[in-house]
Amino acid sequence: GHVHMNATIWHTLTGFVQYLGNSGKCKIDHNEKGWYIQYIDQEEVIRKAEEAKRAKAEKDDEERQLEMIQAQVRRALEQQGGEIVEPQATELIRTDENEKITLDLNLDKKPTAA
Image (tube, rainbow, N blue to C red; front, side):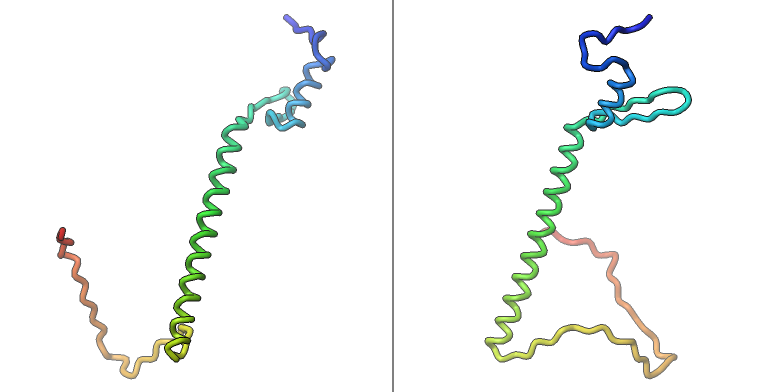
């Protein structure tokens, strides 16, 4: 059978499919076999955008809190007359190449409830 599109502004189904793609309502693909249409769920897109926005806001809040804490520490050190020392990475210098390195890892102990 066939479908008449008399009651629409589109004269052909191809025009309607192109409108759906151009308006962002569907993802369309045209190849030698014909048109392929994939519906885009706008609610899901909006939900993902809101989730990304919320995650960014949380990250910004955490960074802002960290900066405030660092500023408070600096002010406290300055008030005490302490020198602010920024940590710097240095190269490991070993005086004796044969010196043993020992680590004490207590992996068997389980935390006790207080």
